[in-house]
Amino acid sequence: MHVPDGFFNAPTSVATGLIAAGAVGFSLQRANRELRETGPALAGLTAAFVFAVQMVNFPVGAGTSGHLLGGALAAALVGPWTAVLVMSTVLLVQGLLFADGGLTALGTNITLMGLITVLVGYFLTRALLKVLPRRVGSVVPAATVGALVSVPVAALAFTGLYSIGGAVDIPLGKLATAMVGWHVLVGIGEAVITAAVLSAVVATRPDLVYAARHLQQDLVLVDADGNTSTVSPDRPIAAKPAGRSLGVGIAVTLLVAGGLSLFASAHPDGLEFVGAKLGFEGAAKNSAVAGSPLADYGVHGIGNAQVSGALAGIIGVLVTIVVGLAIAKLASLRANKAS
Image 1 (cartoon, rainbow, N blue to C red):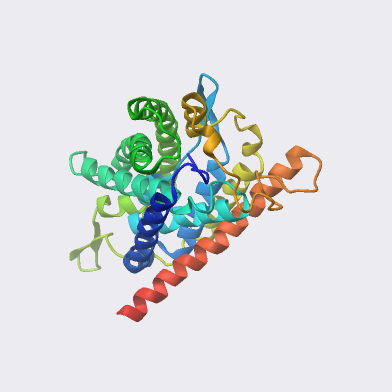
Image 2 (cartoon, rainbow, N blue to C red; image 1 turned 90 degrees about the vertical axis):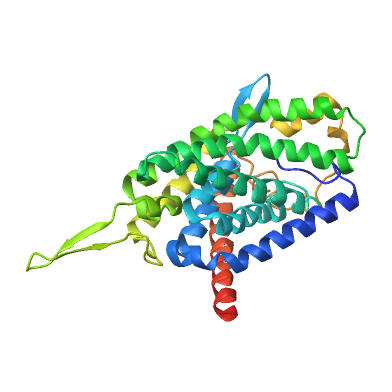
């Protein structure tokens, strides 16, 4: 669902750029509490994991494919405001290094994939947790529904933006039907991936799941005299998660980007498919960084496509970790100065 340059007119692109800039700025101010609980390392790893899984397009039928957006998953893991920064990091690396999504459309992509999916996914997750049994495992079904709904909502938001500043005049009813219809199918894949990842993390390290922390049972401590006291787990966890957990996470992320991505579907994604069907695909313009050595997720100069793709994925993961960590650190520093 990466929007290329050319789909929207200049005023619309500027407007979404301002929305995205405002969202990132606001998130930099609000993410400090989340980062104290989850730590910048987890934010960097989450950004890298979302980047890696987005490389794996899965078929959804009729010659089209989809990939994880990741907003709901990131929000469940690190909190909504850190998730906005995580998604913005992913989209920035993709746009600048891999020519995935236009540079003038970066604000549009952050608005759709880095803001709407995060907020819809997270607040729906929180709403469902109020009615589901109060236990850590409830995060999985709640976030799964949030992930499922967030994708077609983002597709509907794209339609709304297109009605304002779309480059080609097309029937908006057909656009809305096609975008939402196909992205419901993509949303099902989003939900499956979100459920699988959260199930694994909740089963091994529930303390690293932001949305689960307030659901953990109070700890009952008994001293030598038999006196009892309770300690709530709703307290900041270690700023640096266990090295083993981080190591496993990085290894899995590198495996996805450098291995599993080589088996991704070659079919166009939902937006490309709809654009071709409705006749606005031709409005797309090449990114200004289309000549990047890593454009199209390959390393230019390496003849073997599999080696090229694997190496590009690994480079992308490492760059995303570094950028994600830097942005998380910046958020912490800004908040500390403000206080």
